[in-house]
Amino acid sequence: MKLKVPENISSLVPYPPGKPIEELEREYGISGSIKLASNENALGPSPKAVAAIRDNLGKLHRYPDGSSYYLTSRLAEKLAVNPDQIVFGNGSNEIIELLINTFLACGDEVITSNPTFLVYQKMVQARGGVNRVIPLKKIPGQHLAGHGGGTPLGVGHDLGAILSLINGRTRLIFLDNPNNPTGVIFSKADFEAFLAEVPDEIIVVLDEAYVDFVAPALQIDVRDYLDRQTPVVGLRTFSKAYGLAGLRIGYGLMSREIAGYLHRVRQPFNVNLPAQIGALAALDDDEHYYRTLDLTREGIAWLTKEITTLGCTVFDTHTNFFLVDAGRNCRELYEKMLTKGVIIRPMAAYGYPEYIRITVGLPEENRRLVNSLKEALAELRED
Ligand SMILES: *Cc1c(COP(=O)(O)O)cnc(C)c1O
Image 1 (tube, rainbow, N blue to C red):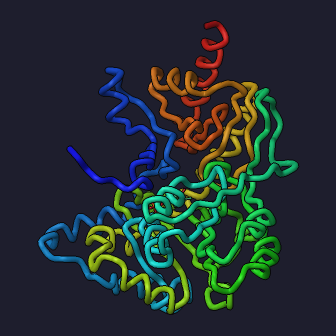
Image 2: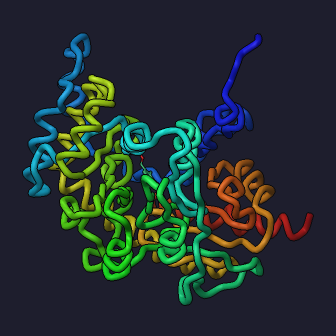
């Protein structure tokens, strides 16, 4: 084929998703595997969401409500914001894409960190924008007890360095808080000092995919900033705390003006019917939500203790996953874990080859993870 593919597209690297369980079992001929690689909810989906979706399957021949009316109304009530400050998407990933497609012209710049959620930079590149990237900075006290022997790398957003990259072509700044893959957060005071220096025409995007797992006293409430001179957009998702990653639904909180532009650009039926029904039910499933938070908190504490004992360095985290410095190239460790039926996430694609990222599982999954990791590390030392 003689395709004419623009350079920004031909040089794009596909997103490396966590390995699906079915794929692992097919390739290795094993069963009973566990996946602790994609920050999914170990408890499964909200049971209320599942029941509501089941009750509505007979409506699948209809187009969904293009305005997600009931879901938007309920969320607006729950968050005490105006319905016209909410935009739903096919995952918060779609809101990221919409912001980039709406506000970026060819050659405009977007500032992100490295490592961070890989989707921002990919979408900027696909759009013909320019990625300006600042490495995460080292933060004293964030590299916890234990020693993997690897070089401690940066783990927190370097807000000062981000400010220094701003110029006349900067349109958007993406900050995931907590950061994926490190789990580290910045404070409200740091955020406010930063915002005060950002020129008014630049949109600051605060990706709060893991905000549910952050202690309330440490959360930055993005609602306080929606109508400021410097526009702030908050991104949230049903994929993590609500256990609905497979449904694909997330949303942005923003000023009415920004929402208006996103609505013009988005597809008319971007949020499917089961997603609207499921998310609406999940919003009121407090039992599942709080069980998720408890399970996560307990899992993080237990795993941190156990994995540190294995000689790895574990980072302090404010999410449902944590970063581990194994002190060795993790490609083999990842492969070894796969043969034991445990899927974790190697961090080479994020530029941290000696690190792995592990999602908190159910207690029995966490035990299996620790046992497999112990065996794998011992076997690698022998090889
Ligand atoms: C998981 C995650 C999301 C969620 O994306 P969805 O499209 O809503 O599933 C967004 N941002 C970050 C940083 C994440 O880790």
